Length: 184
Image (cartoon, rainbow, N blue to C red; front, side, top):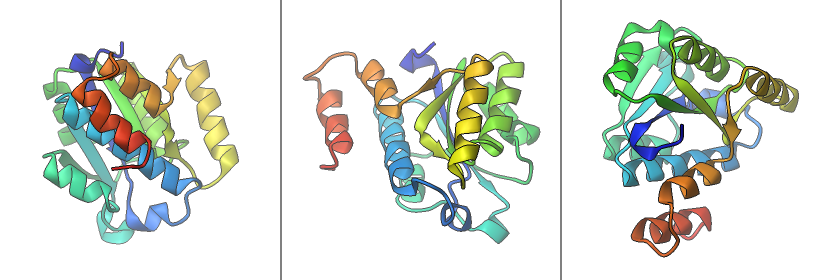
């Protein structure tokens, strides 16, 4: 399920006005950055969404620059589930990946709706637990309980990254370890 050759990274709505009211924003952003860097390292496709960008702003830095530098596909949406937008659904299908790693905000609304719809379409869905957040801790906890009850794995970002790295001492290990330790 976690094979790096069969994963797609999807980042939901990490936008200026939304992020201002999120819990644990710094650590969430750090972990999303780690997953973006790992996706780039292992040639995983990346998609990111912006919910009503005219009103909620663009994706926050440093994520926006990383996405642009790494040729991630950006999509606007008005729906809570990303799969309600045909272009996003088509991009996911065209990736030919079976596993979708989901990150972003809010864990109990847009991330959850997208996860449910992806699973209904037959995808393996993985929630990067420390790379999603909500405005309220209770909302976050409720979402995590839902994912667990719905048989959607909830795994720390670092666990995914080390699974993909496979061996210590490799160039990928050295590069990504610097990000994990905050030295890059």
